[in-house]
Amino acid sequence: MTEAVRDHVRALPDDQLPAYVYDIAALRAHARRVRDALPERVELYYAAKANPDPQILAALRRAVTGYEVASGGELAHVRRAVPGAPVAFGGPGKTPGELAAAAGTGVTRLHVESERELRLLAGAVGPGRRADILLRVNLPVELRGVPLAMGGPSPFGLDPAGVHRCLSLLARPDFARLRLRGIHAHLASGLDAGAQLAVAERIVDWAVRLPVPIEEVNTGGGMAVDYADPAARFDWAAFGAGLDRLLRRHPGLRLRIEPGRALTAYCGWYATEVLDVKSAHGEDFAVLRGGTQHLRTPVTKGHDQPFTVLPVDDWPYPWPRPVVRGQRATLTGQLCTPKDVFARAVPGAAGLRPADRVVFALAGAYAWNISHHGFLMHPHPGFHHLGRD
Ligand SMILES: *Cc1c(COP(=O)(O)O)cnc(C)c1O
Image (cartoon, rainbow, N blue to C red; front, side, top):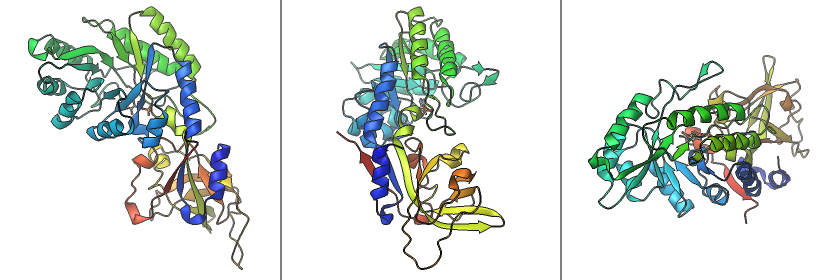
């Protein structure tokens, strides 16, 4: 936890918990390091779906080339939060309205994911206008013998035969307002630098063999965040060096990547306090204020969310303070469901008492914005942005 976050959480009154605390200065520094590790010819887009908080989007502005959005809602939101920034618009299942909005508002790149989208788009671009598109390919890629989640049978993008059908359509005069810039792919998430590079090479090697000129390739996001080791970082230096070698083999090519999680996960914390401690049939539980309706990440990913305890020694009541007596405890929230678990039987919970503060790390991506906020009608957390300009 950064010092700014620790001080801030310590100073918050109980009734302002839970709270999301974002260290904007730390985010800016991290994004700058990522950018500096990449060759100049690699464009860095931020996948807004990881965390579309407007202050986070704005804080990234200097380090990123642009933003990747995956819905008409994200498109409008990003335009408001970072006016004038380049935007790439992707996502499976675009509506005719979304495609028309994207075509009409001069999106920097449109990621076309089906033949239907290509046809709708051709009809949506007005006279005298052009739309710059990438075809999203779903390329079956195996890594160490394991097929990637979004390559192979999946609803994302076009399989290679579909790409070739789209290329035939693009050669027709009625598709002349669509300018094919290149290929997009996003085949997996949670890959380390070596795996990311291997996948990027496969995509580029496939793309440059197409029978049309390919100026650019977007190899997607999915750079790993290790929830079991919050101090670990994706090896951006190794990845950047590898991309540099790849670009040397393809001197005319422009590469683009679009990470989400690996940019913003580290800048966010979910801070709360222990409400209750109990032992039931030999197992210890600490019940926290809030719940996974605010921080769904550990439930969706099936992991223990890493956390730090800030002990609070004041105890205002005349009766004995409960305490976790065992070596381990499970951290739960206030929801009436056994699924409301932040971390199960973890040693870091030993000794926890009501009123102690618990601060969950790696809560800056796929956290608040993927959570089911309305469930049980508990108050929403506060949002705190530290270290703004
Ligand atoms: C979700 C997504 C990303 C970002 O993925 P991360 O795992 O957050 O890096 C990038 N591109 C596309 C097309 C996506 O769907």
